[in-house]
Amino acid sequence: MSFDSLQLRNALGRFATGVCVITASPEGHAPFGMTVNSFSSLSLTPPLVLWSLQKNSDTMEAFRVARQYCVNILSQEQKALSGRYAKKGDHALRAEEFTIGESGLPVLRHSLASFECDMDARHDGGDHIILVGRVTHMTVATGGRPLVFYEGGYRELV
Ligand SMILES: Cc1cc2nc3c(=O)[nH]c(=O)nc-3n(C[C@H](O)[C@H](O)[C@H](O)COP(=O)(O)O)c2cc1C
Image (cartoon, rainbow, N blue to C red; front, side, top):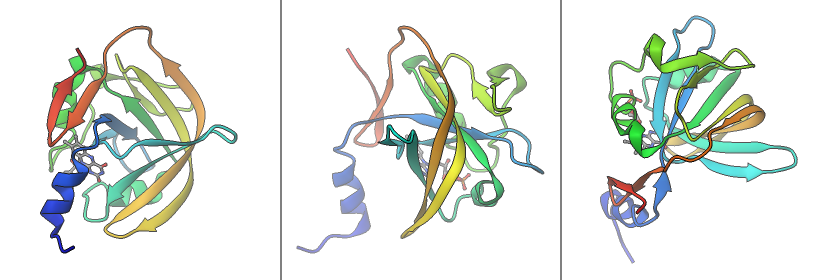
């Protein structure tokens, strides 16, 4: 069977995911956010998670030097944040949008859950790199509904 990358992308879009904003503030960089849906849990013991970053992302250099990152799982009320941090050009966090977590990382307010992670490993993954994080702290909200991404668009659980 032959297929091009658009057909592959569309087929992979049949997999419904949540939406996260990865936040970080490595040395020499202001606090910033990046929208991803490649987040996945990896291991409970040790507590590991992963996500992947396009190698041509403007945030690549910041994540190359980052020793920590925070995964913020978005609620459906945070759809605008997802759009903002998926845009090229300006990934800077606004002061009112985050607090500083126990590990010193920027943690997005009103997220369903936030996982502060130490960078555990970076693996090559074709046109992406895979960033494995070891969870050091987490914040979990009660209630709330997830923002869902499916077939290239935002959805809500009903
Ligand atoms: C719902 C959604 C999910 C995304 N998931 C990823 C992802 O997993 N990895 C990634 O590198 N980019 C992902 N992107 C694109 C990034 O958010 C990023 O904004 C885009 O690459 C902009 O270019 P820049 O990173 O060069 O600024 C996603 C975008 C959206 C809207």
